[in-house]
Length: 68
Image 1 (cartoon, helix red, strand yellow):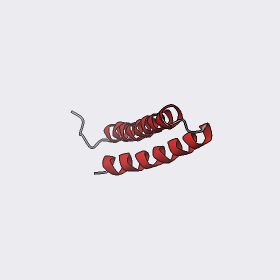
Image 2 (image 1 turned 180 degrees about the horizontal axis):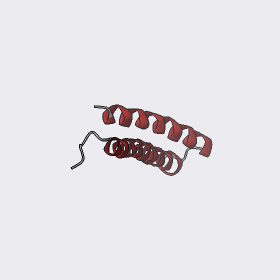
Image 3 (image 1 turned 90 degrees about the horizontal axis):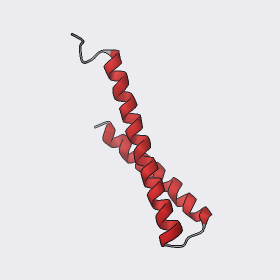
Image 4 (image 1 turned 135 degrees about the vertical axis):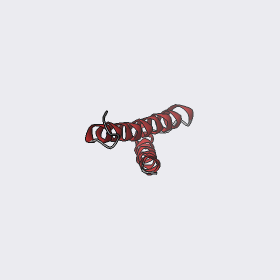
């Protein structure tokens, strides 16, 4: 029986963590882009800048949560 602290198990956990962070950032960026662009009628440049800002913030929050 394999030990839970084996490198293979730790590696898959790291992939899940980074996948979670990337997914969280992508969803936040998509949401804020669509909100800015279509609901608030902002310019494309402004919407992309806000999307990038929210993606970075969401990734930071997800990273902090994943390391708890």
